[in-house]
Image (cartoon, rainbow, N blue to C red):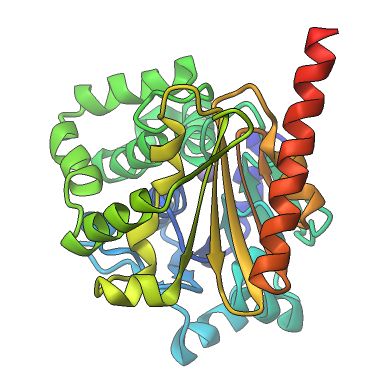
Length: 333
Ligand SMILES: [Mn+2]
């Protein structure tokens, strides 16, 4: 697929919904917001509808109340839509309940993504660019290709948020020239970049900091200090009056420790365990995530595993240490 094909798919549709993965992040919401403002310019009837609510830190993107959580009214919108534009998804079923609405009603879809294609690529049309740091970057390149003057301040804000968050503030190895070009354009258009940063990164709730403190107390190191891992559960979150968004980014934070190459979170969902992996670049954690039934990028991956917490824990830790030891043996010999 190329940009012209994306343009012509959109041109033929009137009623379009935009969606992304459960627990949306800065790329999901930023790129959805950019796409929304673009579609509105084209005169489309469109809505952003996600399975999950919008995290509070992204309320500044939602001043016009453009983000909807799936409910009866929005399910009706999806059922009658000509097209669903799905952003940053990785896997079809990360749409949550929206996946079933699409399947049951045979809705045409267009997936725009920077994750590797999954086995569940059930989209009608798929555009993937693995070299893009974020879907925001893909959309920026799309607008530049078809007509750069389309990018107004609203669209730019979404693109900038997508790129800022998915590159870890322009620090991760996925940061490209285009990522920085987006920052250049954002500043030229007089976006208040330091305010945006504050909204996202300097508005930690007290509960988040308390939870981080508790997790630090119980942080574990393995594999000669190359692996840092921690476990979490609902009770720990409740204890600090927190929410599920309070531990976003903890894995990134622990990866920043000197000598740590991989950080891992194990979230106990009673019968299921959510695993979140981050790597500094030496180890491809997506390989472990894949073996556990998940996926993602080489250095940022995740999996949701069925089973008792203690079993999943010993399984993933032994897989990781086998992988790390093997990698090091191969490199010594
Ligand atoms: Mn992304």
